[in-house]
Length: 335
Ligand code: NAP
Image 1 (cartoon, helix red, strand yellow):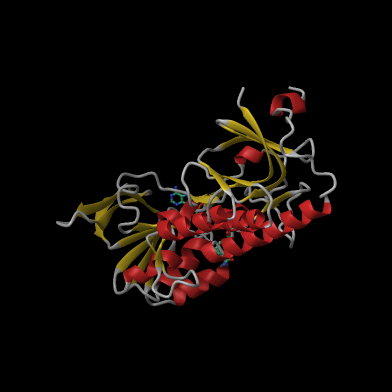
Image 2 (cartoon, rainbow, N blue to C red):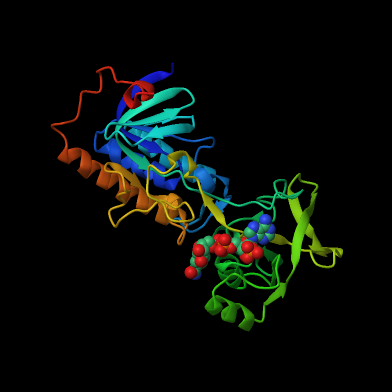
């Protein structure tokens, strides 16, 4: 049986939302454990130059921003656990049970900041050239493609919106869509069609991202293998960048139907970041499919933490001492 540990707040996820939430709850003197997930820092930690996080006039590297936020939360006593959540029990009321591979946490309050993951094409070269021409974030990386030619993959709102945004920097934006009909809203389609820098290739998928390694060891995307799904015709197109916007998947599967979600799996929260479960709050891309910025996630993490703090304060008299033995997930749920 895994170790059982009682704590006031468990933060699930270590992106900007989670790290900000942990800073606030720890600084409010509530014992806080952050379960980082497989990788510390979430999506921002895989971004090279972050130019749009306020407070860093010269920009900052994603991993360094993560490290600074982690250190700030740790300064106030937040504990970081490099583990993944495998199971939660929100059905038996607070304190809630959050199980990881190694430990079972019994937490009075939970802040869910586990984020969403951009869908991948899963073609050769995609992983190898991510960060070297392949990107899932136009706001993060568009600036590096000034005067370059880029491809955007997808036919939804994200592809068109980000494609339009990329025309501010790129010389040309080619939107490659697997069908001959776009999924995006008519308004976005009109704007994209009217933009002289944007052209469309329909009925086409990318089979491979091509690139090379320069003398200094830096990798560089040089082209893509395109395949027309109707004719089967294959051709290589030289390109400097490939932006992939084929949807996002919120990492909400572990919660099952214990928390209310929308039809795409995003958690529903109210204006105080309260989920459908009392004492469980959420912030960042686990619920936000619109803004998706490090700074908005941090703000939402802060709001979720403040709501958790208020919730705990209102129950100060009912909170059990943390040093008492806690029942396990199995015994509490009667399984
Ligand atoms: P989406 O609406 O699911 O669109 C994904 C696009 O990628 C679709 O065109 C899809 O093709 C294509 N696609 C999926 N898998 C693919 C694959 N393996 N290979 C090639 N293409 C693939 O996702 P989204 O654009 O990220 O939007 C998500 C949600 O956020 C939507 O509800 C959207 O309305 C909303 N959103 C709104 C705005 C706005 O209002 N301004 C902006 C961004 C997002 P098919 O069309 O053939 O399925």
